[in-house]
Image 1 (tube, helix red, strand yellow):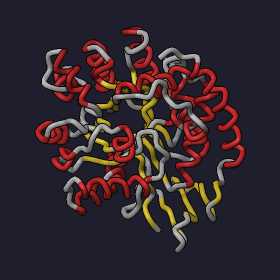
Image 2: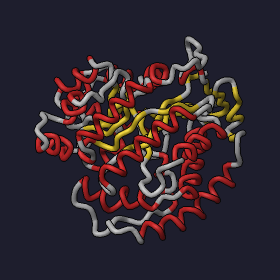
Image 3: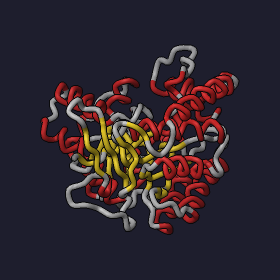
Image 4: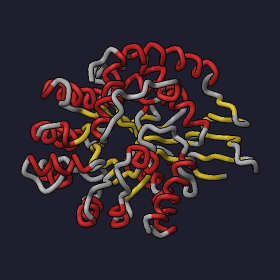
Length: 363
């Protein structure tokens, strides 16, 4: 028996990507180009139908790979209101623990768009009654929001007793933007505006200094490293993250195969001079993170992961059994909570419609 696996930062809205997502055109020359020509076009093309298919496929596939809890950061600028319910229903019905948020941003519709994103977070936190799902306050990234939006996010966190989930220093452009706004960096900006409440989750942190990483740790916040995504986007490796023991790993929209993510972490981390025991601890830290931010009366066994969820594996390493909060989710490698072939077929059909909508979105 082994603890359930935790994906500490991902994007369920990317769940249809394996079904032939169109390549960005023209080919991107920077990280911002990748966002503008691929992922920001995808999220703008999402509607409730596509999101439903995307979330169900991603969650089902994650369960088959041993993930029992995930922390999602969602964006769908054309489908804001009610979007978190679509994702939450997929998680609850299939048997996945989750912390969900909408990443408020001003990159398409200015302050009104940001207010709607924060309002969706607030609505979901107050209305959600699902046993396996909780809500957080989200910002896309500091470089896509104003000071006023960050302040409002901090107020909501304190009023609702919620944590913040935000991208920080994934690329050097985030640092440059903070400097242009008169701050030493994005962490200083978030802290000065009252948004870094204890337990908050900062995704990436690649370009932070050692001092800033220690400051995040001393504030009681977490950083989530995403090795495969950072390598794929060519944004670098966060050597600075060795300055904190509050660092977990996520997949940032890549398939929720945490064993593959751990292997990538060790491969890259050892090349960058990180000690094996530091990498081992980081790969397992997601369990401590979810126990901290999702501790809302969930049962927790002393030796179990993901608030008490357990997995068992056959000798050939194929996942055999999987329980979440005592509910059987997987038996003999077969998903019990839904038909995976039906989910995969619906995802493939919906992906074709989404790619057409995506082609119509102007970069």
